[in-house]
Length: 371
Image 1: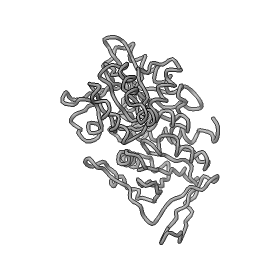
Image 2: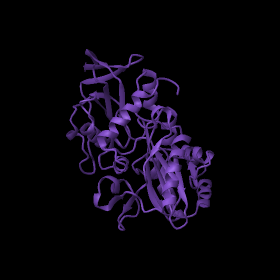
Image 3: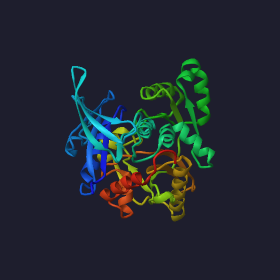
Image 4: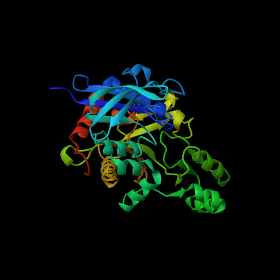
C-alpha cells in the first residue's frame, strides 16, 4: 500500500514568516518518513506558492532576520475538488510545463499569523476538498482575533480579563474619545495588534501620554488594536490535543515562562533571539487545585471556540489570589522541538515525532465538510 502523502506548507505573508520556516525545520526533521511521503511548499511574502527543497537545515532561525522564502520558476497549485496538486513551471509569465504530484492526503499548514492561521487558508483547503491539520475556518479566524476570542470566551462564561477594542475608524475619527475610554482600564496596559502573534507590535504602556504612540505602533501590524488591562501572576500555558473519534480534548499540565529580571515583558526578541532571557518550567509552580483548574479551563476554551486538532491556551495564574484568566488561544503555536507546545507534551510522555504523527492522524480521521 502507498503511504499517505503530507503536503507541508510554510513561510507565508505575515510578519511571522521566518518563525514559520523555523517551525518547518523542526517538523521536517521529525516527521516519520517510514509512515508518510512528504511534499514541501513555501509561500513567499508576496503570496506565491513555490516548490522548495525538503531540507530542514535551510529553514532554521538564524539571528534576528531568519529565513525568507523567495520566488522561483516552479510553483505549486492545489486542484479544486480532487485533493491533488500540480507542479507548474512558469517562464516569461506563462506556464510552460506542469507535472501531476498526485493525491494529497493531508496538508500540514505550518503558518503563523494572518493568511495562514486566521481561517483564510483553511477555507481554501475546505474548498479544494483536502484534509488538513489543525483548527477549521471559524475557530482559526476567531482565535486569531484577540477581541473576538475574548468576546466568545466571556460569552461562554470563561474568564478573559478586561480589554477594549480600537478600530482604525474609531482612532481616525475620535482619538480623544478612544483615549478617554481606555482610561477605564487603568494603568499599566498592554497595547496589541488584534490579529498578530509572536508578540509583534506589542507595547507595555504605563502612562496615558504613551498610549497614542503605542496604538500607532500596533497599527503597523493590524488596523484593529486591542488594549488590555495588566494581569498579575504567572504566565502559564497548557497544550491541548483534539480527542480521537469526537472524544473530549486532551490537555497537559501547565508550563511556565520564566523571564529574566532585565526583561520588561515577553516580547518578540525575548521569544526568538535573546535565548538567555527566558526559560521554560514544566510543570508550572502552581498549587494542585490551580493546575487542575487550568487544564479544565483549557479544555473548555478549546471547545468554546470550536477548536480542532491542536491549540495552546495561555493564562495568567496568580497563586496568591487563586485567580486564573485566559489570555489567548493559539491555534498554530510555535512548533520547534524547543517550543512550549511540544515540550509540554514531551513532559506528558509524548515525544516530538509521536506528536507530529498524532496531529496528522487526527487530520486524516476527520471527515470532509461540515463537522
